[in-house]
Image (cartoon, rainbow, N blue to C red; front, top):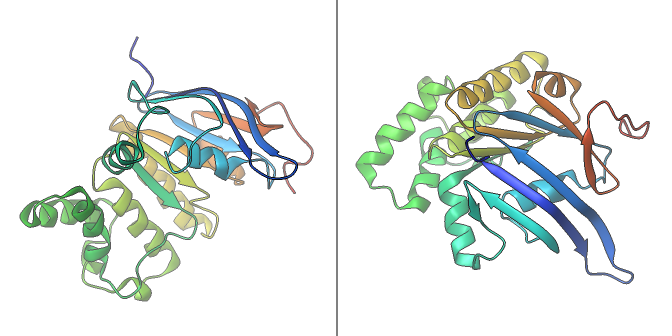
Length: 233
């Protein structure tokens, strides 16, 4: 059987305070290539903390994390940064679009970080914008886009480097139903290409859309049908 794209075992995070604040106490999660996983939970349950750990943006207090079969918890900071840039794609609720740069420039920035040559960048940027339906807006500045277009631009930026894993934090949170459906369709296209997609969400539609929905509660991941009356807070 093929190894999972992402495998967390006993992943824990405690913030240094007085007294210490445990947020995640032992997360076990395996996500396979082409699988769509939704993670829900009440506000403050640690969903964003978990995403930061899975995305190598933060380091766990305990536990192990393997990405594409590689143990990551022992990597140096530089190795983590390189691995993240090459193999992971991120999508956030607030999209983080650069308003004074064109759509093409927003997407090309990811490739510049990876050291892709200029001619290669142009081709990959054009393909990414076409995939999300923004070819006609390639030269428009980010500030002139609608909310749905900005999120699709964020998706193009995440997709352009052909990551193996996409991590998304409330990607439909600010969108109307039609634009939210468009975003999920684009995630579908990535999953069909074998990309593992993990989405943090409060949106019931996203939980139903996923191949598997899990709920974060008391620092652990539980099946989505293990209900918690506080999850809607």
